[in-house]
Structures are given as C-alpha cells and as structure tokens.
Length: 361
Image: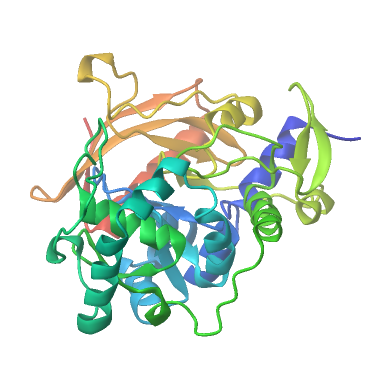
C-alpha cells in the first residue's frame, strides 16, 4: 500500500482542483477538469459558480463566457443544478434516472398525460420557463418543503433527469427548458448504468486527486471515489483512501502554490470530512444559522494559501456603495506576514474583478 504524507495528499488535491500555479486559461477545460461546478443562487458576493471559476481563471473570467459556453457554443450544459461538460452528459443521464427515488418514478407514472402535455408544448412552441407552462397534473407533488405543489417545476426537473428535456439557457435566474434532442448532441449515446457510474467515479477522482472510497453525498451527488484509482494510506488519518493514478505519479513534482478565496460550494472544501482529515480545517456554511450563532459569517469564504486552508473571509458586495465590504478575516492560526499579504492581495483582486473598492473595518 502506498503511503502519502498529508502535505503530499493536500498538494495532490490542490493541483487536481487547479488551484496552484500557473492558472488555467480555458473555461471549458477548467470545467472539464473539475467535472462539475455547482450552481447556487446566493449572491452575497457573486454567484457561487462565478466565484469558483474566478478562483481558477482570475481576472480573465467573465460571466458572459459561461453564458456563451452554455447557450451558444453548448460545450457546457446545466443539469440538475450543476454546470457540466457536454461531453459528460451521456454518462450523467445514464445514472441520473436510475438513481431517482422510486416515489419519483411513481409520481411520473401517475402524471403521464401531464408529461405528454409539457413535451407537446415544447415541441410545438420551443423553449419555455416553468412559469409559462400550464399545470395540468393529475397528482400534485407533495412535500413538506418549499417544492410542495410546484408541479411544473418538479416535472421539468425530473424530465431533465430522465433526459427528455434539457435546460437550454436562463432568463435572469429562471431556467429555460426545451426538448433534450434540441440541446444535446444528435449522436448522443447513453451507455449502460454500471459503465457510466464507473467512468463518472474515475472522472470525479481525477477532479479531487485523492478521496475516500465512499463519502456522504448530497441530493444524489456522489462524493467518494468508489472503486476508481489506486488505494493509498494518508499519514495521520485512519482507513483507506483512493488516489488518481496520474496525480499519484506526479506527487513529488515541484508544487507552486498561491492564494485563493473559495466558495463554500467549492469542491476542494465541499466534503467537510475530507477537508478536516487532509487540511485540519473545520468549516460550516452558516447562512442558515441565526446571526448570533455564526462564528465566521453568513457566506464566509475558505481561504487557501499554498497547500493549507488558513482561515475564512466574511465579506459582502455592496454594489450600491461600490464596495466589497470586508466584515472580518478569521485566522485559523496566527499568520506569518507573507500569508497576510497574500490574502490582502487576493481580496484586492476580487474587488477589482467585481468593479468595487475594498471597504475594510
């Protein structure tokens, strides 16, 4: 069994997430390496997907580039709240429908005429938002959450999971749907489930560098490496890990780190157990907590310097005032001067990219 020092494992993880030097220069290649970028509407500073891509590409990234790749070039695609490479959509569709809860399939079966109405409308009239589609359901969607009775939204999301419709763009924050055959490649061939799941696990591990075989998932997304990669042991942690073979072979190559401000949904930190094991970094997204119970802030950004996660940035974009307001910078341990300088420079870079000035306490 190959043994990795924790520093080696951290550097493998940082490299795999394109957070070292040099920065990548291609948006599509970046998403391809990351395998997915999560979409989230929270806009405390900038939407999460934009922050993830800026932290890799730097000032060269503009949101219009992402829109072009999704809606015009179609090299990327939105599926189930993630931006993914279009080249991966067949793998995604092969697993998405099969991984739906049986109750979802039962609900779809009970609403066949509703499904037919929606598909006929899209076929005849082209792209629509959910709000533009009549609700003709037979059995309403029932839940204890905010999706209760949102029948058109739920049907479109489920039909996107099964590959019958696809998100073809956005109007503001609203998804626009069309028939999948008009969005996906005409020669799309969906592979068998087991083959697709294994390939997605390989892609996932390549994007993470090193991961547990299994990990707590969320909303159907897998976080673990499953059977992909090479078994390894990481010093100071218990149990077995899996490492991407190419990353493992390059583990002793020179590592050139940098500072990065990360979204809470960034895949370097998204698996909180992995982050604690490898980086000794505790993090909780506190936007759902009462203000008095927050330690780090509403949408605090994890701070990476080199191969260490060193603290959290509590900041908010105040566009009316033209300021990136820095409420607090939390140091997980006392920083050396060069760490503080790197963090301040990255905050300045973020503000410049946003077209704001920095407002410090």
